[in-house]
Image (tube, rainbow, N blue to C red; front, side, top):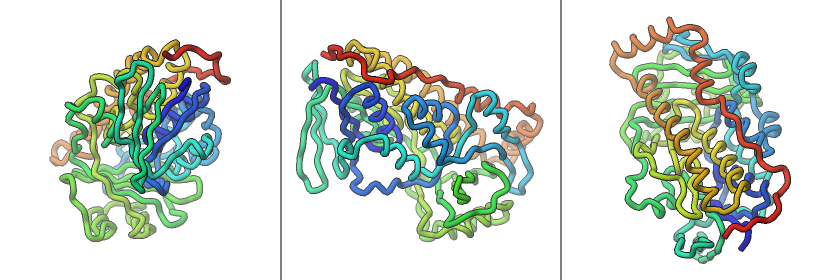
Length: 400
């Protein structure tokens, strides 16, 4: 059995965890329930902490080459006036790298390129974990064609998202994710888009519209609105044109440059009840499975990437898996749960505000805030230094 691991989930966090574990000399299998890896999603921003995590995993240079730095932008009102500016150059000087924007499909592809194809099993869902043996975990998974398979490994990483089956098996009494009160629609434009800055958010009453400029000239946009869970529109693009009618350019132009079938719609969930631990024996939780948060700080993927690096570093330190996962939990749980609380608060004070007086008060506060306030808010979460992963596998240690 030796240094063997199964990662449940082939998203950003799961792929990063597999890369990190392989980097320290482990044999890793990634089990992903999706058969066709279409990389559903539009675009993503990665702050300095996410880029540094990718550097530690050996994938930072490739991601930088495919991404576009976010140097100009900020927060606006629906009429287009600026509430706060983002100084990307200052952030780069402080952190060594700017915030970058990249299509999710590109990021997924680059992460998969760091792994041998045979370590990724698609179209399979994990069904059972048997943790009764002290020195191993038995994992059972089922393929789409109902073929069953099982494996015994020294470590299991649950990176299976907000609806995590792994989390439910480890903590059956946990209530699971809750609806945040918001829903998000997003897409990439069909071709190059004319935008006046690299990144922008526009806050209205109970609504937010943002965009990210990408390296190939296209733009990613997202619209977050207050809505009950399960609300869907017959024609999402038409609904957005109605909802954001009268908002400043380039919002109408971005919607006009989008194909209707490109629009994705997801309710925003979060783990409002923090987990008591990110580890149980030889099983660890990572990313949204451990700390699903709202997107209002743009830190969800960055925190998952941090998780992956810290997990690999903890396991590399040894001398046993259980102790390594206890250290991983002690380091990651306080930070990620703090970031999740901050993201929730940012949503309540930003996109989710609806009362006119509260919106006016918030806007005034942003306008009169010192110019470095936005930079300091980003630094609070992005100023993270990853642990160093060994460049070559260490001498074999006991993992029993």
